[in-house]
Amino acid sequence: MIDIEMMPALLEQKPLLANLLELYAHDFSEFMDLQLGIDGRFGYKHLDLYWQEPHRYPFLVRVNRHLAGFVLVRQGSEISHDQDVWDMTEFFIVRGYRRRGIGRKAAHEVWKKLPGKWEVRFSDRNQRAKDFWRCVIGEFLDRRLDPTAYDQNGECWHVFSFESDLANINLM
Image (tube, rainbow, N blue to C red; front, side, top):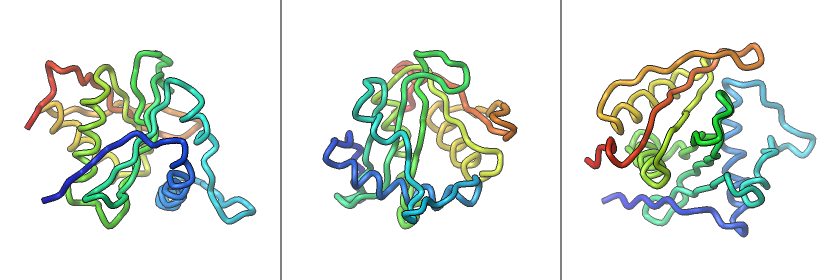
């Protein structure tokens, strides 16, 4: 049996999260123009804000007590600027844990913990993200949902917008 835990990342776990963000950035550099710094790291300029601003929420994902990924959530839309929207800012499952339902369970857990309006966005270049989010959100809502395209700094992005209130949560 797979035991999946999603827990808030504590301030003392920031270095751990920073290490995971390096793996995430490495994967993401396939789709985005991310450059290594002079220290050989990608870095993540918003990391400190997750313990400084009250509308940001860092989570660690563990599988059978082993670290498996993270989820960063922010309240406030990057797209519509609606301050009531939950934004799935960053979402990462380590490659060895992918395609086992762990990402799906982690996403569903976040949407259950933080009900309300949500936006999940991804680059047009990342077809795997589109397929993953379409499937995971569709399963959560028990209906198909298509993303909306938008332009951000000359790049094509897509966003899934939906609501995760307790009335429409598919509790499986």
